[in-house]
Amino acid sequence: MNISLLGILISLSSAIYVLETFIPFPLPVGRWGFSNSLVLFSATLSMKSALVVSAGKSILGSLLSGRIMSPPFWMGFLGSIGAAIVERLLYETRFGYIGMSLAGSAVNNVIQMAVGALIIKSYGIFSLLPLFLAIGSVSAVANVYMAKAYEKFWEVKKICE
Image (tube, rainbow, N blue to C red; front, side, top):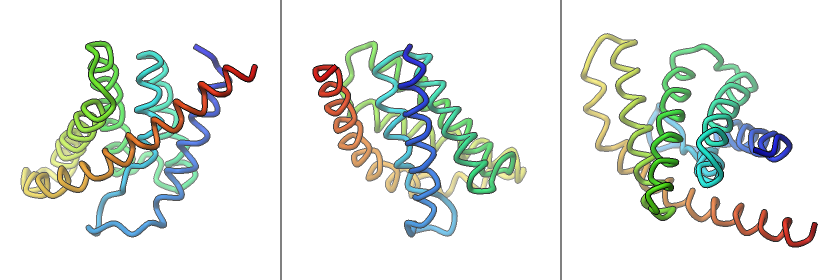
């Protein structure tokens, strides 16, 4: 695991995490999740990389956006960790980026809803799950294109070194 690469990935994903708060979302709660594109890319490197980038971007991004230790922080943090694990496991079984990203997005949303249900002590939050899964599928596909761009960039960097 290259520590400088992980630092760059955490920094980029944290910056995207903060910037995406300025992109309108169709629901009053939620985010697009474009910072997860770097978690998806990290899942192709190793489980440890995926977990470090996932945790790092959630912590640093939440710290920078003033959401650290809030209920949305815990929902996003645990959802992102779950997505990272699933994406890496699927990568190891030769799933492509689209399958990895869609599954990661679904796991992320289910975990977020479960954490939300525990926080508000109501399962009613799960009524939003189909909508979040549909919107999450759109951002999951967008994340695939971004992850492939990162992959190409790092391949070019390796050739140039």
